[in-house]
Amino acid sequence: MSSAMRKTTKTPVARRLAAAAIALGSCLALAGPAGNAGAAPADPVPTVFFGDSYTANFGIAPFQEDDRIFCFQAKENYPAVATRRLADKGITLDVQSDVSCGGATVRNFWEEQELLGGMKVPPQQDALKQDTQLTVGSLGGNTLGFNRILKQCSNKLRTEGVLLPGEPVDKDEPASKCGEFFESGDGKQWLDGQFEQVGYDLEELLDRIGYFSPDAKRVLVGYPRLVPEDTTKCLTAAPGQTQLPLADIPQDALPILDAIQKRLNDVMKKATADAEGGADFVDLYARTGSNTACDGADRGVGGLLEDSQIGEGQKLPWYAHPNVKGRDIQAEQVADKVEQILNR
Image (tube, rainbow, N blue to C red; front, side):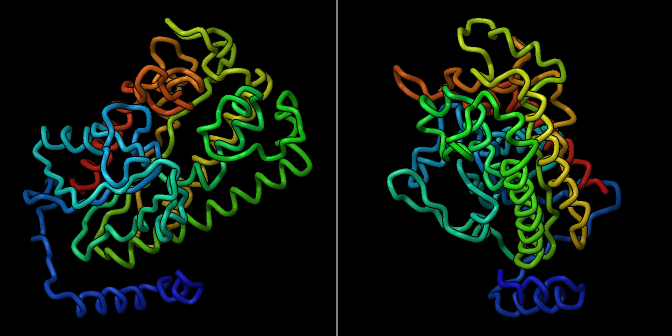
């Protein structure tokens, strides 16, 4: 979306004109009947899921082995589980598309994404329809460069995390000093710039949904908490594991990583609060403090180098993505939020 387009979609009048133009260009305009206040819609709700590996639920098998195989989208990702959960409550989502894809940045909502092996997938916004009434997904972590942040803090990820995209922010700075690196100087300047970009891009993402699907409820889903308040929990391997949940990341850097993740959560929440026309936020960070990567048997996040479900013989690591327990927490929170929205 050009800066000119961004400006034209800022005002209610311009947005109504844009919506009208799209409607006139459609062969058929579909509109759902008005529902009773306080009652879930009787008709199926046209829905699009978008997002990155946390929506695709990288690490959970089996995954979709089609022309988007390297998106690693689990067949039972949280969109699928949340949809069933809502159906059990009499709320039917007509899922028009789930375009979530591992590695997606916010910009991949409107730009094509290149996958492993040179494969490409179209912009996620292409899934939006004039009659889409609900959009749900998580984006922002890859734009921030969280993988690069993790590699800045871990020698093991620098050498063993070859399948984890990205390089350390500054490979000449030792991983052991990553905490102070992100709190001052070039590291802090880089981080501030990344957060600014995330904010701008999320604003544009929400604008674009409003432009292409004017009647859609917009739901942005935050990320689950990775680091607990008590970081000593991260000094013990989970049951059945030999690696520490956050590998060799120094303990003094863990509160800083947690602060970075909370800041991302706050940026996402602010984007929805500021969105013209309104948008909703699912605050997973606030709800997963007892299910971090360091919570042992209760962990909802697989350890950085813990084997996921993907692979034969040698498994791919979770790289700090939700496991099945974490996926179910995501699905529950998303379903509850959607039910609340549709019952307004």
